[in-house]
Image (tube, rainbow, N blue to C red):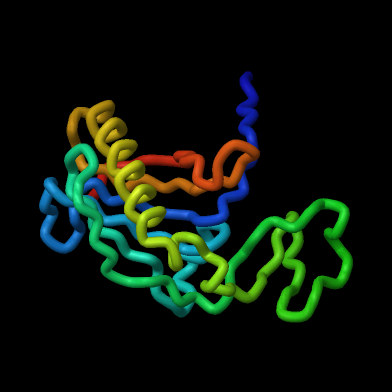
Length: 165
């Protein structure tokens, strides 16, 4: 019997990276769809649009912003000491250390900083190329998050990868 133990990461931005453009399966272009907070915002079918970046699959490839996110709410971690307490206006505790909160896009660096957005797109593309190569150059749907740490505001963490269909 074994037990899997994983470190919990709380992304500022969650993403799905398609290593081939889903609309036509063009393998020279990747598509990033991203949303603020936990990946539930993307996975749940919440009303809104994710950030959409199209990235050429080559080193430092061109990044085109196709859409800016406009979800009105996001799930974000709440410090454990606040679980069960009433949250500030515009927030409500959902249990398990998450709070649903309003999104202020003027404070989302991926929205307001084009250079940062391009850098994130290029870094995600490089990760996508490496993961795709590991799985025999088969297109992948990769889920992950951008996590703030003491050293960086955009460490990339991969949560899972599966063949793109």
